[in-house]
Length: 400
Image 1: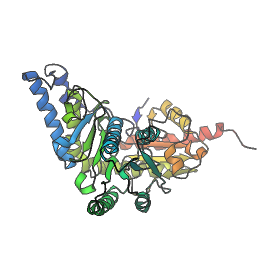
Image 2: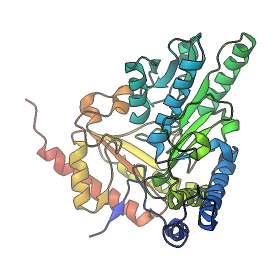
Image 3: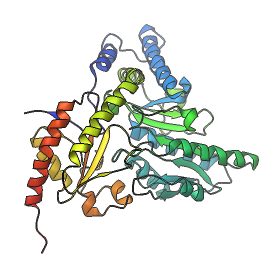
Image 4: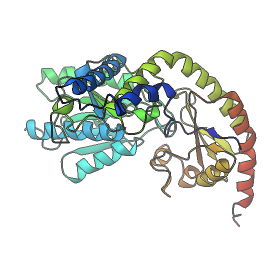
């Protein structure tokens, strides 16, 4: 049986080049980077080199890159670290205000809910249009004197829609210029770039970003490594106490092999981004063209302002989880909604925020392509999918 993996937005396999780069740091280069001897300094050098690669990629300084375990930790660290700092250092702000959207990753939404629950922040959850895009006007109108953080994801993990990050960055810069003259607290801008970093421009100065989070396992590095960019001057309190690692912002012995892996992953992204993006876009277009020939199927997300690797559909008369099971029987791995919520019976919060009814959202099917996806694989999916949908529609209960 063929095995076709089209769930790269959930996770990617570790590439051979990345595995080869990290392997020595499990064995003969095993040192603790906090120690002054040769083994320790060898590990420290590897960390410094990885940090510099990521900093250069983002147009940042090495000291602005903090290594974490994943994007979820980076997001928690960004939001909680900033809000705690402002809450206890800016006496004029009793409840720091956060602006985010209803289609964010659960890591953002749940962190914001937690900050609300413990009385550390007030949060505005902005609506989106039918494509999943936040309106700049809504952000402007939601800003209050006590607003200190805007957190909008770069690319939606479920539907692939790209948010207007550059425009949001310019809006915040404009508002901050007037705030400085009035001696008011700045607004800081965070973006979850997990699905964007492989394919889109992530220069933090060009986009006006103060905090940026991403994860290695979407970039062919292993699970268990991520990073957070924190612009110099952003008020911050670390959330994990202990030693002075990561510029005293994240305590704990550094995971050297995985940090090396993330550095190598970013290096490969930089080398291959243009070619990889073009190839994947062509394959995705072929996939969409084939899938939309099936009656009762529609593409969701923005039709053009889209990440190159994600294609999500709503299939009338077929349930998402059932489609995944039958596709898996045919050797095809796909997803229904995001990996973090696909085990839940609730409809996707992203699709319902975009205006889809719960029964429609339950019929979602996401394909996410990767660097190893081939035209033959796409042709096979397009051939098999109509049979799967037809079978499920026949099995569906008829309403009287």
